[in-house]
Amino acid sequence: MSFNINGLKNKPSVIIIILILIYTITLVSLDFKGFRDNIISGDGRGYYAYLPAIFIHKTLDFTKIYEIEKEKYSLSYQGHYFIDHGDTKTNKYYAGTAVLLLPFFLLAYFLSFLFGYDLDGYSLLFQYAVFFGGIFYGLLGLYFSKKLLSLYTLPKNIISIILILILFGTNLFYYTFVNPSFSHVYSFSMIAVFLYFTKKTFINYGIKNIFWASVALGFTILIRPTNLIILFIIPFLASDFQSLKQTIKRFFKFKKEFFISLLSVFLIICIQFLINIIQTGKPLIWSYSGEGFNFFEPEITNMLLSYRKGLFIYTPLIFISLFGLIPLFRQSKYRFATLSIFLIILVYFISSWWNWFYGDSFGMRAFIDFYPVFAMLLGILFASIRFRIIKSILIIVCTAFLFLNLIQNYQYTHKIIHPDAMNKEKYWFVFLKTGNEYKNIFGGIDEESYKRIKEIPLAGYFNDFEEENDNWILNSINNVGDTAYSGTKVANFDILTEYNAGIKINSDSSLIKAKNVFIKVNLKKYDLEKDASLKALLVVEIKFKNGRRYFYKTFRLADFPQEDYKKWEDFEISFQLPKILTPDDIITLFIWNTDKKMFYVDDMKIEFFELSE
Image (cartoon, rainbow, N blue to C red; front, side, top):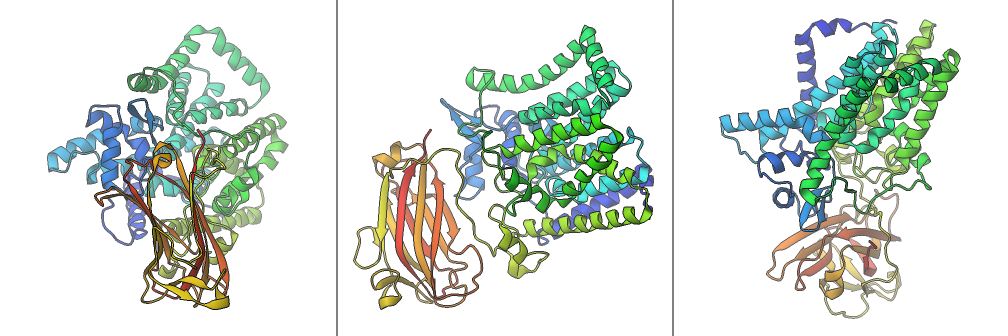
């Protein structure tokens, strides 16, 4: 079986057609809603925020951006990437992604001015500036991945296959075409550039290669400083110990190369130092306040194999690439050892982050930055196979995984795959399912926190619905005798009872003084018909005294469709509240029976805790 698509490189019209098709697929995956106005989304808003802050609002205090985003997004938005540092609101994300997007931002600004669009940094043309920026850097990363693979004298048809697999068979596709405001595609491109010019330096030592490798490394660090671990792959790129030794010796011997390299990296990362100084007066700050690494408790098994976000579950092509280590071992013990050491360091480092699943995301996104490395492994694997039948089987398996990835991209975009709360049962329940009936079928789970929850609650409330309780909003209480979980009475939900089991809590001094308030809610529920509480919601809202709401969030009472019913089940959820603003604020919790089906609730418990600093 032979594949050769390298002729495309000389046919830009074909490439443009392919990109149009990809964009059409992206639109289809969003229900034909037309032009997308939410391309800058999620954590990507934080990476992007430097551009409107500096070039539109002329400030590095992100208070203005925070206020704008609160108006644009839901009331549950808490701007977690904006951190108070004294009187200044700083951005916990680093500036590298914004710097790379700057040309696209400036073009969008010019065109928005020309055609009368809002110059707020978030109107349609700014959204698409990020979209095309993501495509540009995705293609740049693939281009230098191609050049890197060509240095290993791989056949052109194998290189073409690998590039197709890396783009369409991994979550790089999602973070290039669907959610390009995240940092991953930009790190992917810069690491590909760094690997190519570093490898070139070992082949043909020269100041040009050293300079461009240094520039790419500088941007790699500026995007995400933790990407610095890519330096551990340098011994592998040297091919053998003698080459590594001679090149390093030469590099440090001739001060010109060393100076240019150091200066290039330093000048680029100085962009962040300068921003920090303007904001806080200090060049170095730990922007990820309240977060960190658990190096003594890495979640390696979960990170690789869990159904929640496991790398091998959602991107099985990466698992296939590891078979490239077998022929590598036969070819060179040195290269096998150096690459294996890098992979062990990479896995250990990524799995040690406190939030090992990296929040709402498609797959294990932290690995996307390093996909050029796995492209090399795929290249080694393909090139090592001599038998046509084995190579054909490998291509068939990889193609199957490619289509699986595209289907899962579709599922994730359509909210069939939950962004945070998948498990084995859920995964196989929707495996290869794409129907509308599977959208939003799963509920969420507890929010994670790096900070420790203090044992003694700030406040607590309990209701078994046997007697009247102050502050509780009860619209329907039924005496069901022995069916009740405790006592004889329950909060009843049916076609006539849409809202029930609520409580209004006046914020007191303990909640005002607490910097981080965490709520735990526990209750028992009993469905009288199948999936009666599947779409029911626990609603939490905070209002000012005048009734204006400034926080609103909902949680599903059921995490998964039921196999049976008419039995008591536990519901537990915990989550963080935003900072309570005034002593007169009112916190309200209640259950919303959205489907107006029949179920009971009993023994409802609500506790407020403070998180440690």
